[in-house]
Amino acid sequence: RLAAQRLVRQAVEYRHPFDFDLDLTLPHVVFPETVVPAAFPDAAVLVCSGGQLVAKSTVQPEQAGDGLYDRCHVTWTGVGARTCQGRDDWANPATGDHVLLVTDAETVIDVSAARNNMAYTQLVIKQSVARVLVVAGSRSVQKLAALEFAYHRAAAARNTHSTAGRALEETEASTLVGWALSGVAVLESGWDVFQRRELAVLDSLPGDRAAQRRAYADWQRVDFSLVVEEISVSIVDEPEKSAAGGEAKGVKLLEVKLLGCTAKALVKSLEASASASLQTLQVEDLVQSFGPDYRLLVGSNKESAPAAEALATVEVVVWHPKSPDRGTLDVEVKAAMSNLYLGGNLETVSVLH
Image (cartoon, rainbow, N blue to C red; front, side):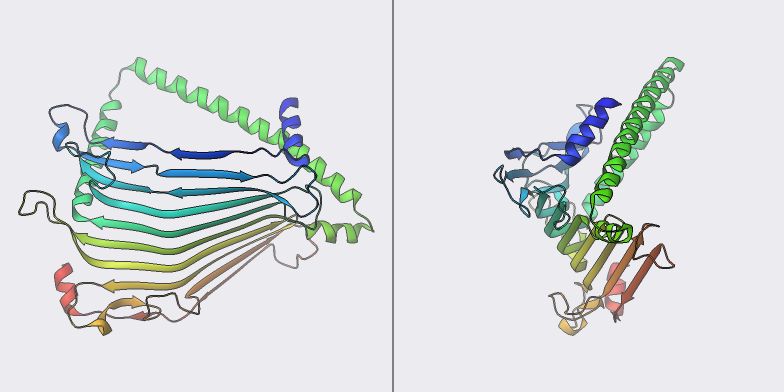
């Protein structure tokens, strides 16, 4: 317990910059339908790619003045999941049918070098993702269904284990519970240290109690922002085999696009606020043959770029009971939504059916 208190005190009150430069190729995680050699070539396989992770720190000089930050820049590319067959070269990123693909995810983390200066935010996190692509293809859905059935069957077989096997599982579970309780005790110890430290900071501020609480309440602790430029979900008809005997490319039937997705959060000493917004929603009909005017089944605007006005916004504010800005409410939620247009035709309905 004392070691946990010292660790929390060192992490919160003192600056410990360190420099690093990482360039990692993360492994593939493979979920096969079966590992039986005779059946493996025709078995469904789900391959989850970890992608490429690049992380680099920018450490300020030791004599850094107020307002300077220690920065960590993380870039994560090539993250995704795809379905294959056991006989395929699933280590090749071009093999199989993509189910999920995340492109160019970047995170910038800034930690204030002036830990006790209330003029500066203690922690700033900015994340951005260029595109998230989800593909619901007919071949992929069949393989995922086969995987789900195989794992349910394996789980049912594990339930028929002997009493000794069940006793071992109960022992493992009790060990995990013990570790979890120890972790909770460490967190509680660290929280005690943090509370005493915060009270000392509050008492050290100039002015009367009201002025001290006002200055303390305005101290920004965490500033978080996330921007996802595009989320695309496609329904694809994928034929099993092409004329040459290989897998043919699929034909898109429907595509759902979410453009301009943002999320923000600001945590102060006695107040927290969060907001999220969606600029544009479009459901594109890729089957219809009537022309571009009939392209959208659902849309907040006709252009492919995000609209000037957000389609939907949500804002949440939570006040601490001792916050000077708290009125009669502890939590306030605001939501707004602009116009959404619907379309459709019988041709598309018949094809999808």
